Image (cartoon, rainbow, N blue to C red; front, side, top):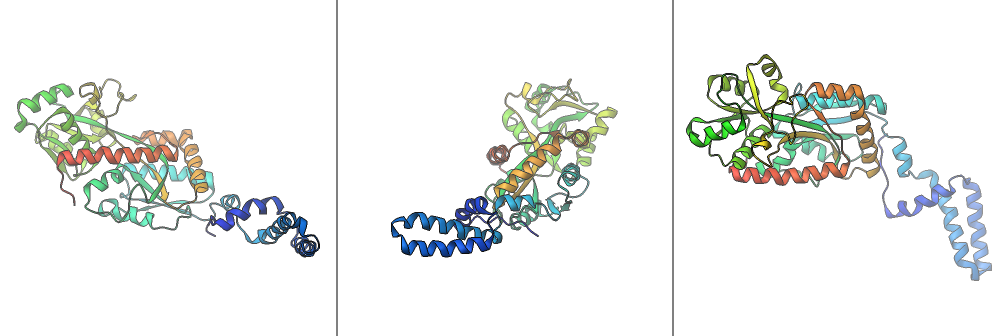
Amino acid sequence: MQVRLNTSPAADAARPLSRSMSSSPPAAASTFVLACSSATVAARATGRVLALGCALAIGCVLAPGMSSTAQAQGKYPDHPIRVVVPFGPGGVADVSTRILAQQMTAQMGQQFVVENMPSAGGINAAQSAARANPDGYTLLLMSNANAVAPSLFKSLPYDPIKDFQPISTIGYFDLIMVVDKASPLNSVKDAIELAKKSPDRFNIGSIVTGSTQHLSAELFKSMAALDSPTVPFKNSGEVITSLKTGDIQVGFEMLSPLATQLKAGSLRAIAVTSPKRLPSMPEVPTVAESVPGYQSASWNGWAAPAKTPRALITRLNQEMVKALAAPATKSKLQDVGVDVRSSTPEGFKALLVSETEKWRKVVERAKLEKQ
């Protein structure tokens, strides 16, 4: 049975009455209604008081057929919950969602089913979730890709801010500025100096246009006042290969896909894009130490269709916060490169709004053509 919370004016007016009188048997209520009607004819002076009594009694009669917010929430969930992921299986976004879904399943007693929908730049996934019944049984994995989408596409069949209710963030994914082990570049300062001295010999690599990695590189160029080209590749493997062949001098990539190369020493991280140095790499400075104010990270979280009842959003938020704080879950997420950080629904929405504006400016400065 799906949960549907009745929020009509009539239901709102009757709900407090039904809770206070729900223990009265229907037969007694009917007798009282008749008594009220007779008494009203006999004593018009007290009509207002008696009328209120009648309303209370009628509320008792209707109460058994009504479903209150509290009652509906108490039954939630009573069947599996679908989590739509706009990325393919195996990536960090997919893996982090499955780790959280496993813990949420254990906590809430119903299966959280992950459905991958990696097409059309995530548009199909977001549209599917936005149009789903707002009953708490369809959720969407949102990321900063949703914040970037309005600036990259001429039109969208959904509004990332208006068509969803954010529940909680899951975490953040730090990026690094990376070079080949044989590169003469040892710092962000070295990279900026080379780019300004020989812009035709300095290329910055990232994965596909419009990705967090690509826009992080564009943000760096803008804030460091560089004219060097950014070269987008299909995947992380191509970025690594181009660093080694010298086709690009610096790459912007998430930490997780490069962990093996960094550990082996075939690549070197010269900076992290987070506002503070990472506990796992305390020796690596931040980009902001050389370019004040610079900060970039990928993030994700769960959201529900816009009209999902607030009671369910609150319940899901509480369960997500609890799940993300569970030691085993947190450890698994950290192992795949997630900086685990839950949030309030309001905090998540504020992040979405601010990120949308931030990346709009970056896309405009980079003069990226809308698709």
